[in-house]
Length: 77
Image (cartoon, rainbow, N blue to C red; front, top):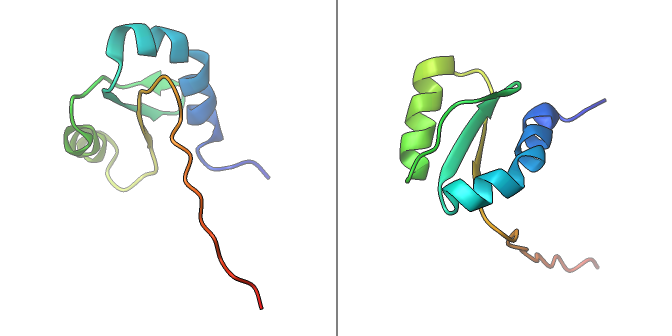
């Protein structure tokens, strides 16, 4: 079973070099294989996605040279 937004993530990765060179620190919503637009704010990218797709899932990603890594520790007893 594939992740619901795997196609969109792969589209993002395949265009990452171009995105970084032209749209660094902007947000890109992607639906299926369609790159919607580029936005300066997360809020604007979400609003446009909701306007276009309603409550259907779509992908929004901040364009960055490197991914931020978050570590979470959960103590197991």
